[in-house]
Image (cartoon, rainbow, N blue to C red; front, side):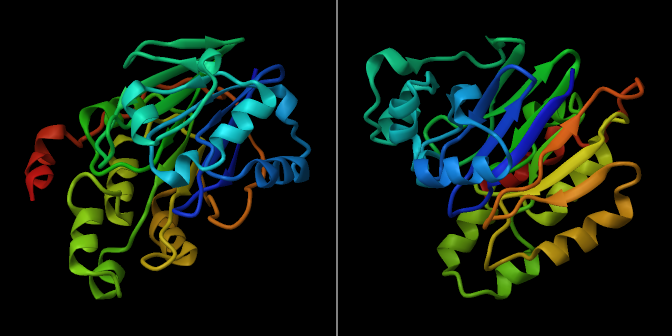
Length: 277
């Protein structure tokens, strides 16, 4: 059974990712308002009536903006940590709030969702992988640096939404104030194009069929630039950009040929120095 995935929007103006099998669907993050979420899903022929739950990665507004209305309207359980709930000052109906534990799988129908901690400047940030019948898709955005958790879960994926937020030179020469530049590149902000490419080329599993480059900065990156960077290393993996202005097409991810994962050369010890800059 394939997983069907799409990015409804990916960027600092709103993030929401739809992952489903034939029977059930989840949203990871709800950064678009309810009406826009419904509109974009409708253009893809998708229905909120198939969505069974929402998983929240952290409390920044571009990930939770539409959450209260969507959850209430469709009576959807929301999987969220207490720190994220408090940090986002969210008002949710008590019976909809669900907790989760790092690295422990949650079952939604035949979907298996595994949360894991990541590096980001939020109270208790998480990323997620979603699996069904030995097919696994990861949603890896808002990541300051490739930690051991990210590397390990990335190597399981048949497809992934992977952050490629900024080009180093564009950020350095751009209009952002110095403190914001340092926040973005300081180890708990966002992944650069080069960091994402290094993770992809060093740790990509042989069975990865799709990579959707996500959470691109409008000011410090461009789709053409990041595609040009990744295309020579793509091999048999289809590379696409998750837009910050519209939904992507629906991608159908299946298991395909079984191979042993490539052994990654990235090691957490190589990154530790950057976390304290």
